[in-house]
Length: 196
Image (tube, rainbow, N blue to C red; front, top):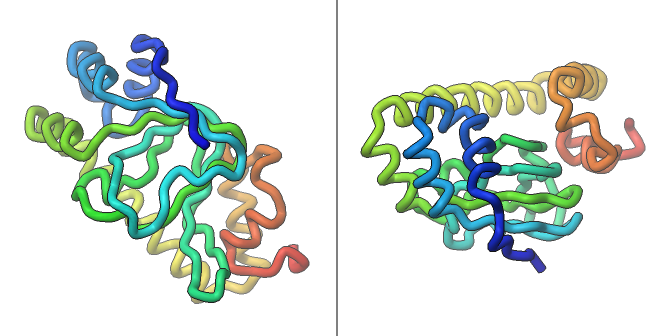
């Protein structure tokens, strides 16, 4: 069960928010205001952060650890949509539109993450056009990544998908940890673990 962190130092949270691609344009006053409204939690490895279809708690910012974002088929097969680490965000879509979670997320290692409620995020966006522009640019980049992922799954051989993942892993230290194991990589690339 997630542990609520009531004593997260606001200075540390402000630093994490400042490093995030959405909030880097905000000044200290706005960052501190967001930090005061954030709820921070610690999750154990394997613990579910949120489930597909449930009401949205908000936008989550990962401070420590690795998280998988996934969908599960009716027969229980899991496909990992993304693997994320420190200073990444999860549940961006639901955090922005307030709708239900479009996928599930679970901790792959010990995770510390903070959640900004949809309402908090909406007020911040309305108050700051630079924040709105950062969000648009980041969502466009995320959309490009998802298009590339679908392209890879639909058009490339297993060997090419593995090679592309290894190249991505070289660029992203969050993907090169013990939490990102063979089974996790296989579920992300839609292949069997024995294939790796």
